[in-house]
Length: 290
Image (cartoon, rainbow, N blue to C red; front, side, top):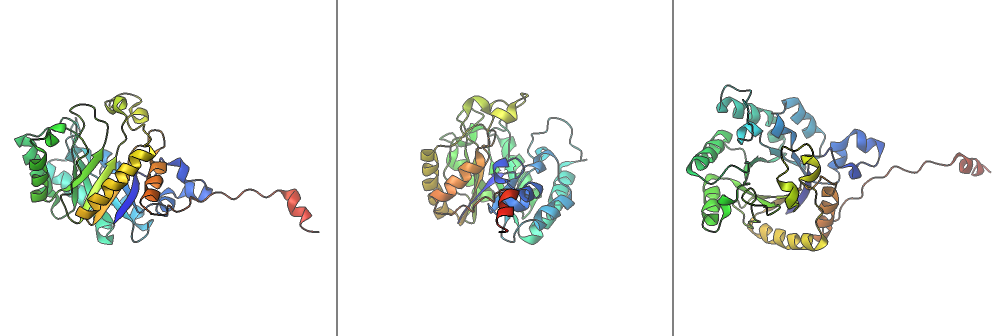
């Protein structure tokens, strides 16, 4: 099964064309896609009430990919608001309870930063993170190319299989050591995550700049690129029962359109986006009385 969704549900204005949809975006979104990535959890461990609300607003078969808190992946440069790693991981896991109990948690995404290189220390960091997450399904995404240079590619994938990490396959700009190539391989027979970041190489290193949100993921996939991905996804589906695709190229509002286009290429019928009915002309209504 191949399921397609977007990173976040709040910023895709083209999906919310009615007043009702604009007021209840997640509910409207979940009628159009079967999965979503929760990004707010990266910036702060979410209160359990948020997870309960989101779980309640979505259909039974809807799934969430929840991004690991930045303190858990080494992104946080300052002090973390926890006494130690164990307390931080415990708080994050507790927040997931509503999604886990409802069966709506697809996986937790551990996306490590561009400076997280392939070293012995990094390997031990990954082992500890996986141990602290216990039996919660976790996907692993690298940003430093040292993990997938030719001499390390199979060793990295083998390590992920041994430790129980699901592979987050990435499509992203090829922009030096802080980016990775497309590695078409599953490490878990039940689930593989795919994240589509776009291919805007110039904007890839814009983190820290005032306009980084506007340019980093500014990219619209062409039909040819999506056709290539449709074939790649079918091959991944042969390795993994569920392939979950998240489009993250939304700096210019392209993610939703690209996701729906890929759905069509895979033979999935994208649900129609509800439109606000046109206002009736009072004059016409009067004529209809006679």
